[in-house]
Length: 116
Image (cartoon, rainbow, N blue to C red; front, side):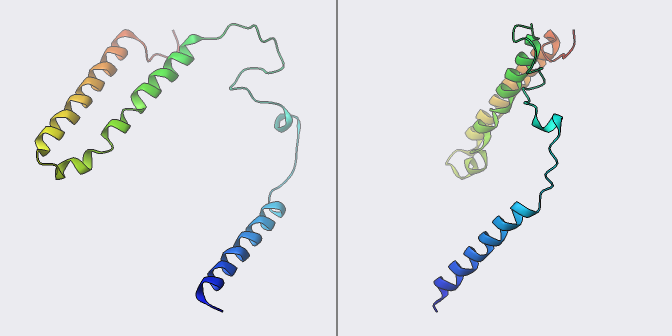
């Protein structure tokens, strides 16, 4: 048997063992709470026409906005290998300054307050 077959046999054995254990291991005790549908904190069995707070969605949008800026800063460690690393640092500092000013503005306007 060559090495590739041994590795494939070991991987298949581990996969089968883990699949079988996953069927036997969990405790299956369904009750009313586990069987009821969950809809983000709203009562799914009540009326669908109830008013809800837009503050929740505004805070969620702000979180996504301030969370996705990380994608702009991910290539920053490779920026020191460019011909002008100071230019990369200044652009990153500008982005962080702009986001910090936006956060301060939202904080002062009360956009981050959960309860009114």
